[in-house]
Image (cartoon, rainbow, N blue to C red; front, side, top):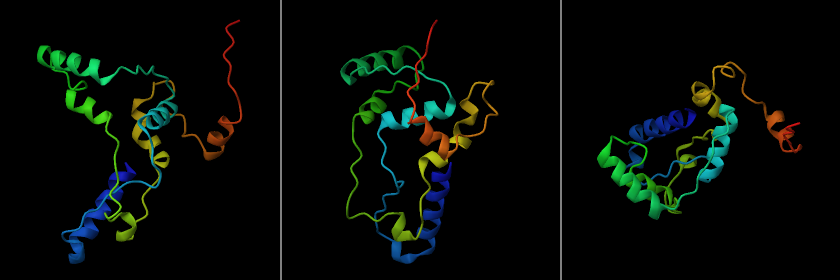
Length: 147
């Protein structure tokens, strides 16, 4: 949510400043994340653990192609699967938010507002975790006892 506002502010600066013409901008946040880290952040915010199945692209692409022909399948597009395995390479010559005078928001500061709608109705109105709760979570080992 905030990243969209940051990008909108960057576009506004680029439109109003003629010095930004014919320049390449890479608009990314202050912290790099892997897909696994983003998945973990989302699970913690939604308060629901979902299983992750690491299926190789060689198997997933033909299955998604067949499912795409048989039924309308928007989640299993072969191009999206291909994109999951490509690392984003940042061009060192490209300009960033700093060149536009904008400080981008941190991803973890924006997840509550965006992901609250994906929570179970039992947890929907719980407030977002504080920074202290996030730090304290790393201190303890949680063991589920089935006795």
